[in-house]
Image (tube, rainbow over all chains, first blue to last red; front, side):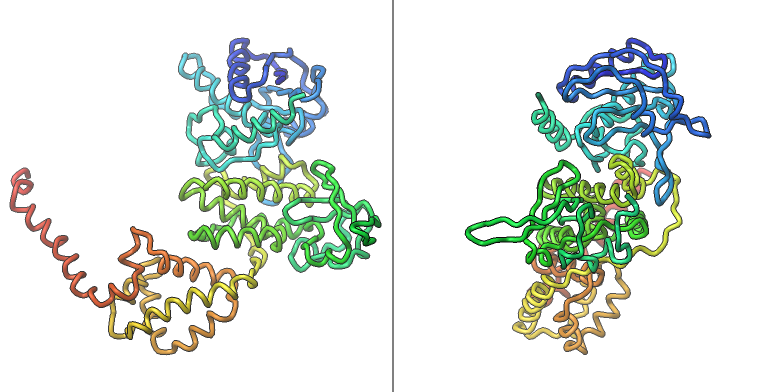
Length: 181
Length: 327
């Protein structure tokens, strides 16, 4: 089961749309588990939130066995800088773990037109699939059309599909099958 | 976890192999080739097939799986310590540097990649990831190599995560930030560590390819000096003018070339040669005209003249006909 927890106000129809897409992508039941406050301790000096700390400290609903929880936030996230600098953070997931977060801060503006809202939802779904994929031990994929392709890559299409490539899909199905309790 | 690598000076490099079990203590982190980061838990004595064996017991960090290695076998399996932070930083500079042309012969590529994963250390794993990533930009990887790419990426992420003391997810972001930087990002790169040399198999393979070519040329009694087109065909690759000059030189001191081929060449030198060798050997349909050495050499002057004619004729024929009038 994938449980979606919002860490701020989100439109119900957006959450419903995201639930449907996640269900289609992983074949797992997906439900909205309510809104929780942002953990203040994860806030950094520059006003962003430490992604790793946020995921660790955010309140989550009760999880059973292989349940996964996906937090949604409108705040900007930060990752610790690496040897070549800080990679852009669209979200964070505990690889092979149970908790992930997606930030909508870097998504294109939601807008008010039907087309722009649809594009925004598709991008949100893509990012959600990406980070839930990490929870199922998927790695980044070189295929620019796959949802597991890095979100900042220049090879990524402007309006990418919210879908996994065959390899990643099969791998996730295998992992889900093995993990089902 | 940073302080858990007691010998940082040799860790991470292929030279940092662990050959003596007495150097290991419970709690030490080591890398088992193709398995990932393991933690030493101790030494056990077990009786197997009537023999008492001393086994080094390790636990794979990823899933806690037990790995046991007989002490005498320790030197041959390629067990090594987790790379140091400094060494891993060098690996990132390697990943972010411009990629070489990928090896196009899948047999050589697959074998070299398998060798690199076993003996190449963390840089060897990074080479596999980078090489297959570069290849994936040209064409989708076949299933086997897609799996190899995924597993080598998994090993690289696990080791970087252990070395830099970050979570695997962040380690993977670092790797891809170097491999696929966002548009407009530039890095101040330092010279990367020396690439891993894989001399063992190359020493066997290289003379075979070379001798086959030599035999075919010698048997036909061809002299390279007399046929300028061969030099041209060879030079049509990436280094046109340079190779033409080299081709003329190579015709005279043949002995030197053979001697150089017999010595196991370093990786960088091998790459260029390895690309040339399979082309000449396999003769894929698209490259036949360039690669075929012997039979074409005789007919080439005539063929070239033929090939040039239609190109010269076509525009001449078209000009006066319909298109000139359209203007």
